[in-house]
Length: 152
View 1 (cartoon, rainbow, N blue to C red):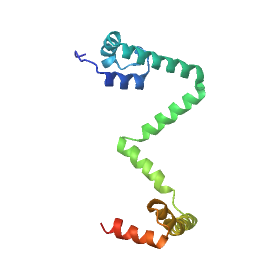
View 2 (tube, one colour):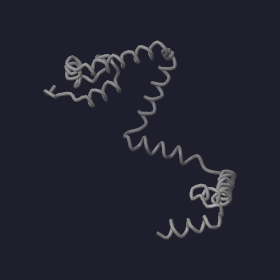
View 3 (cartoon, rainbow, N blue to C red):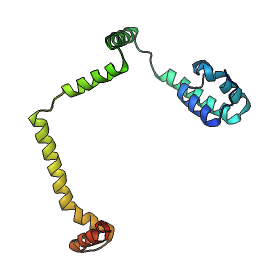
View 4 (tube, one colour):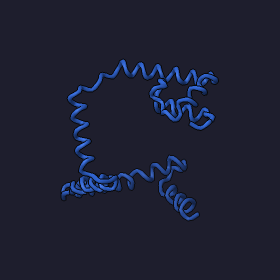
């Protein structure tokens, strides 16, 4: 480990990410973090808050059943065994996304939604403009909007 001086931001980021227990801290930063914590009151308070949060979370969260953990790990290992690189993993995910083809029904419902938004915009735009500009006449409001805001 190099003789690195820990900054408050580094300590805050690391403690926020890894919690208040030093055994969870990254090995390469642990000594610097402990030294910084020993000499800085705000670091001690931050570590105490994170340790309290860790304790609260561990009391609230039940451990996952071993069968579930084993199943997730085996599926992950199986998935990783079929992929030779990160690029393969990404291309597999893209293939999964692309395989969900849109049907005519999806396109029709999207078109209807867009048309409804367009109609609502045309109907409500003059009122919205008059609210911002304060002019009682909506035609004058639209004229002001186009003359002053769009042309400049």
